Amino acid sequence: MSERGYRGYIGSRPVRGSAIPQRVQNLVVREYAQRRGLPFRLSLIEYAMPGSYMMLEDALGELERLDGIILYSLFLLPDRAEVRQRVYDRVLAAGASLHAALEDMAVRTAADVGVFEDMTAVANALRATPFGGRYEKSPMPFGPNAAALIDAFGITP
Amino acid sequence: MEFFQPDEDALAKQFLCDGYVVVPAEDRAALDRIRAAVASEAAAFLGIDLPADVRAFLDDIAPRIESPDRLNALRLAIIDRLRTTAWFREAYFATARRTLAAIVGNELAMQRGLGFSIQLPGDQSSVLPLHSDAWSEDSPFEVVLWIPLVDVARTKAMFLLPPESDARWRDRMAEFSSVEALFGAIEPDVRYIAVPYGHVLLFTHTLMHGNRTNVETTTRWSINVRFKGLFTPYSDKQLGDFFEPVTLRPASRIGLRYRLPSGFDV
Image 1 (cartoon, each protein chain N blue to C red):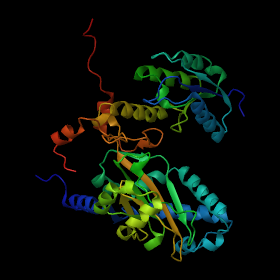
Image 2: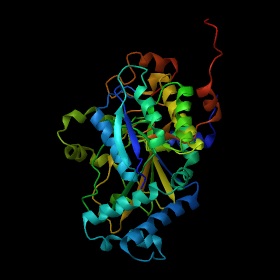
Image 3: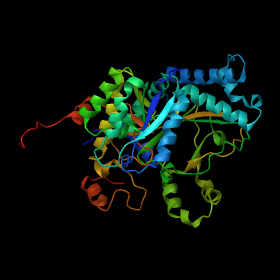
Image 4: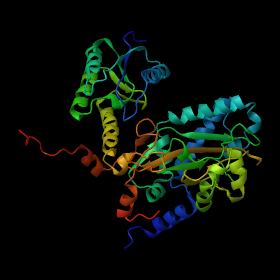
């Protein structure tokens, strides 16, 4: 077994609108590593300031001493596609891998990047779809203007 | 104007009327391959050679399972086998590709995992109480593709409350203090859905459904996987952790990555 191991990476900001306790994020990352027999190295915790990826940068900076990085979720990666691409490039150039524990996915080769990016692109696009891509469990699941919108589309229940 | 093909339209009307459709598997070889994998894993788990008559082996497995713990261990072993079988998800989808397109759409998200049920005769540990998935973590935009690996009917099958009854009882649900009390009231209205092996069941889990103790003489084996329109609203089972895109189309792929020319704000 490699002595280098996999660095965990968890967040301090909401993930897709939900605040996930860091303890829970760590449990998900540890369980992912354990299930795959990946030697786990303590998680780095990203700062709460919007747009900060300083801790991710530190993790990328130590890739030569790691087998890879295990993200709590792929949605912890930077919002901008070109910045995410640089993350993938650095991981692959180091001969390492990038894992997303919650989604149970991994980038091990350049061919795997497309799967991560498709998922990210669709999830981002959902914000712009009707009802923000979200069904709320409430008496007005689509918000106060839903009736008018449904009426405008001529949809009969 | 009518934009749907007549067969699509008929299927859609049946789905809206009954809340489900039962259709022959569109790729029978794919279904047979799934069943063979399940039977082979079950035989390996039991430490026996796979019998030639797979259907009888699955139907009559009960005497070989000594306890609920053993049953659960078998169930988990099969789930693990299917989850790690590279062709499983494609094969599962292939059994109902056109039906899913007619009912849900052709740009789909598919559940990443699967549900697997083995319901032995008389076993109360595998009973799934009355529920609607929309009452918990699921979006009402999802459907369930439910496939038995043996013939199922009566209590060996699952039950569903038809849409008209479901709407009526849903409005009165707060009158009941327990699930069993609610089931007692709706029981005359529920429909046990017979599905012969070689067919698949597609249903909306917004309708109340579940199963009861299997009082037939043989064992039920079934798999369930959820599908939804890729760009329809999600609930707590989200894209990524629970669903993944399986048929993202080229136009969407282009649109998702398109950026307007920039540099005009200097």
